[in-house]
Image 1 (spheres, rainbow, N blue to C red):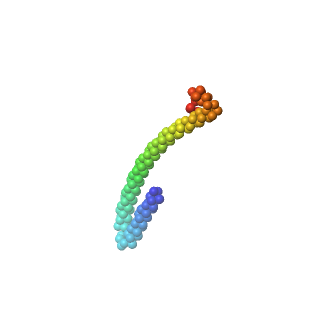
Image 2: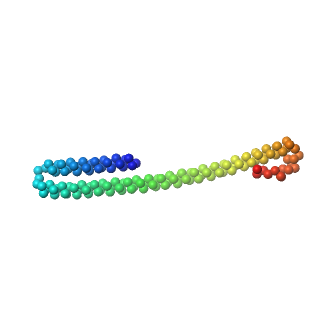
Image 3: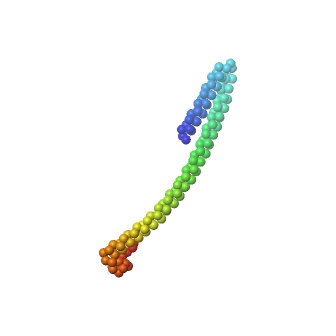
Length: 134
């Protein structure tokens, strides 16, 4: 966006300078008295300055609107992204909890099976002693 603003500023500057130079050249080549030419140059330079100030103010106003709108869109985008990330993290926590529970259950079952293979009577006797939360 700054490249466009720079090109636009260069364009406006070129128009203003080119117009001023052309106007001064036309006035100086016109057949008028010195006082009339100076008075006309003063009036035209004031008009040109006023137009330049208006152009600058218009450009500043438009730039402020663009920046304000960009800030609002950026804030909304950040909020949306933050909300999506929080939802994703929450989903991952929920999924990881169920995975951990499943793994614990598989480990517990494997321990019971291993205990039965070592001593078939041991798994029923000590079933309460084996901690399924391992």
